[in-house]
Length: 127
Image (cartoon, rainbow, N blue to C red):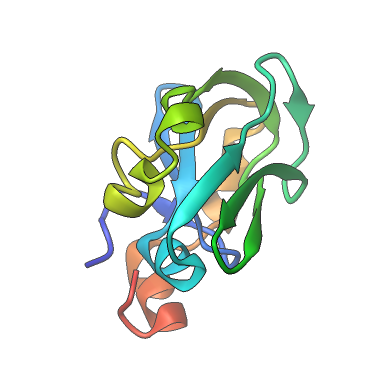
């Protein structure tokens, strides 16, 4: 089930708008494809990123996945719980498994992302 109210990238990141910021994570589809997550490398708070820039890395027992910024902005928070519990990305990718929060530079960039229905078409219902 693909959550409504989030925006999605073709690279399988989700972005949840929250009053001028976006909370970012990887989708259920992405974590399922990666398998058991064993390490997450998060960006430093204060880092400025451009839309599409590689921001974080998610490593599983079988692959390494890059996480790209869905919008441009400044990293204002990161989910440090993932350092000791990277499996949260597998268990709850849309909740406790979030990766980082960006203060948006240009909120209009959200409009360029996919909505739940478009993302569902992209992954064949495996959000």
